[in-house]
Amino acid sequence: MSLMFNGIGVSRGIAIGEAYLLRRNQIDVTSRTLSKKSVPNEVRRFKRAVKAARAHLLTARDNIPKDAPSDVSSFIETHILMLDDGVLSQRPVEIIKSELINAEAALQQQREELIKVFGSMEDTYLATRVDDVNHVIDCVLRALDDGMQQVVDTEQWKGRIIVADDLTPADTVNMQHHGVAGFITETGGQLSHTAILARSLGIPAIVGIPNIRRYVQPGEALTLDGQIGMVLAEPTDTMLAEFKQQQKESRQKQKELSKLIDTEAVTSDGVQLKLSANIEIEEDLKALKRVNADGVGLYRTEFLFMNRDSLPTEQDHFKVYTKVLRALKGDTLTIRTADLGADKQLPGQLQDKLQERARPLAHNPAMGLRGIRLCLSDTSLFIPQLRAILRASARGPIRLLLPMITSITEVEQCLALLEQVKHTLREQNIEFDENLPVGGMIEVPAAAVAAAQFAEHLDFMSIGTNDLIQYTLAIDRIDDQVNYLYDPLHPAVLSLIKTVIEAGQNSGIPVALCGEMAGDTRYVRVLLGLGLTDFSMPPNLILETKRSLISCRRATLRKQTVALMAASTLKDRQTVLDKINASAPP
Ligand code: PEP
Ligand code: MG
View 1 (cartoon, rainbow, N blue to C red):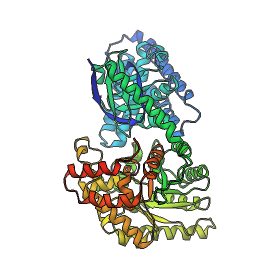
View 2: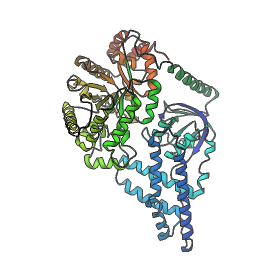
View 3: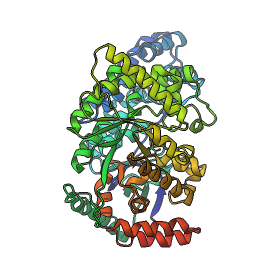
View 4: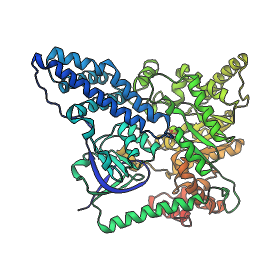
């Protein structure tokens, strides 16, 4: 019988293959009491296991493709460092000796100790650290159990879909090396290490399907759609044929789309469009070049804060920005200053450090000390970034983008701080672009309503619909339970977007839109109808968006969008939307 499962699609792509079941979470540990005589033997056994685990991690590190982003290896490096730390390699030896228990039990005792310490800290950062500790300890336990070679038969991975409770970053890297078709995990979210790596390494993946290993048998036929997060087990011949057809069409579509790379982005009634890219990690730069994007409309810099134990320095920021600039070869780079907090919690110690200084509201972080609020409340976080952005601006065209602005006072504070930084740089004879454009993300309804006032203080605006919709409709953007209420076409949302676009036009400053809506072909024509011409989106959506927009007339869309905004029921709205998209390519 065919079964369907839905999870969180974290890495696009369709995979078809046999299931390979993997258990990665904690291994059951039986405690044994040792005689004094057998202690040295047990210690040797433990040390051998640590060595085998280390060799396993080193192999994973060696298997990292040369062109993989640097953060891929840092995940593995962290695990190697943890394993080398006395807390994991020495302390269990002491426990074996003092308590006369077997290596597994000693290791388990040490795990519980460490989790207790981390657990008492109650934050997302520590959850990530706990995951790391668990990954490393499990690796040693598996080596104690049966030797690393038998842990997984990676030779069997090729072309298969891995179904696991959880995966370590080392597993994910090894999976790409061994040519897996895709993977599914029971736990995890969009921002889990494994999900981030899957996207970077281009492995179709779905996470967050609880207990799937109970329903799927080894070797069973599976299909996976990493975009919509759907898995089919034992699909019927008809379903499988359909899926294969989809896979074929998707490849064909990509081929067709690539013909549009050099096509000018102009609507059929002559409206010039700008289609730029949202980027996060170095890997995105390659994708951006493949589609010939109009520069970067949103560089999310939060990634720079991940996988590290200390805040990035001015030089860390500067190095990355200049590297990205070089890759852009003269195209504009819009750098958003760190939008930390809420859905972009930092891992580990770093979050702790921030909380010590800034204490974000734990109960409702989306409305707490996040984004620009956090940076303004802790300028030691902000100033190195401002200095790095200014210094990099001497090397190529940069725009500075402020996240989550809500009041004009915040903009004034940022501009004053920027002036101070500029003053210091002048004193230090450090070059920068005196006219560095400063823009604001319009993603809080208050800022959208008052956009005309913000436009007077800014050089450009960029509408962040991901947050704008969340705040306008009072829907947590990462809460599955209210996801069905997340409605980009809600008249209130459309009206706010229109207000911002018109405010920009009246003040003569550019307005872009960089939320997910800008690359969603269901909505891009509506945005054009509202007057938007500047779209920023993940690079892999640019050609699809271009194809949809160049084949329509803005004049027609303007009228249709008025009708869409006037439609009060869902049914009426759908009717107008269908008309808007009727001529869109499939
Ligand atoms: C947005 O809110 O629409 C946006 C682009 O920013 P982020 O998704 O990073 O919050
Ligand atoms: Mg946002």
